[in-house]
Image 1 (cartoon, each protein chain N blue to C red):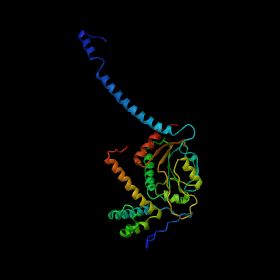
Image 2 (cartoon, rainbow over the protein chains, first blue to last red; image 1 turned 180 degrees about the horizontal axis):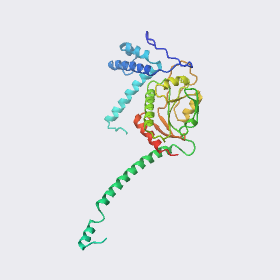
Image 3 (cartoon, each protein chain N blue to C red; image 1 turned 180 degrees about the vertical axis):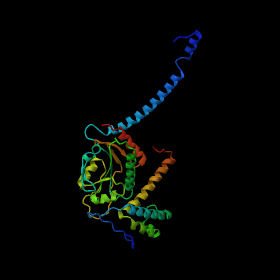
Image 4 (tube, each protein chain N blue to C red; image 1 turned 90 degrees about the horizontal axis):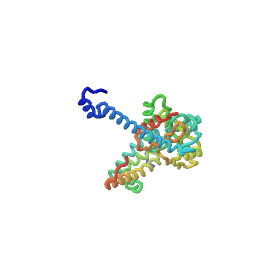
Length: 104
Length: 227
């Protein structure tokens, strides 16, 4: 995990179970994610898992902030979702060029 | 009818049965019928959707369950009888889709309630967790309070939740026996299930519907309810 950046400890509920991120924490995580994505876009990186070393080099600070603000499972999920979304949009564009019509 | 002259009678004959009064009457009833048919067609379409899912024996989606709510009170499918319910499956540690969908659900509930007639059955917003290990009543209470004060958050044992998911045809992938504090995600279906006052499934509302569209669908079904 990110060196120096410490994740805020999850709040504990009255029965001792950790509480899920609340609305504020979620939006902080999404904000950090979008900044990280922006950096990846700038350096032409789509898959930050496959291009781990390059991403760590050029987007070090953004990556640390992303990991500091989001749970580990969320970080992995968002990194994979970025690739899936890209592929989905590519497919949609391709279909549109081929003259496919939007349902609905 | 009497005519003074043959000409007069002839002119009446030439005007035929098409007077302006008859014309207006014809147009009005025509327009009226078009509207009535359109209304009936839409109603029959909704009825078809609602009936198609009713089945003869057991309903295909939904069914009896016994869980506990976020205040640790028992809540069963019996508590849904006589009311409409909008049921959503999710988990509080969900990264992005569930919170968006729950905000939408809160909006739908408010839209439906704002314009539903007083005689309409109530509409319950129900959230059932797919992640009972982490979503204890206390966790659900604080999580759901950020979305809508009326949300009913349901949890139970891993086995109970697995059974409910099965009954609602929800894909259930939650691992059994996770350690406290473990960080993982859960796959689940992302539909709102509209259930009628008999506890039967009516229609699934998906991500493609805006809260306004969803509210219109729900209100139309509620308007059809007669019992």
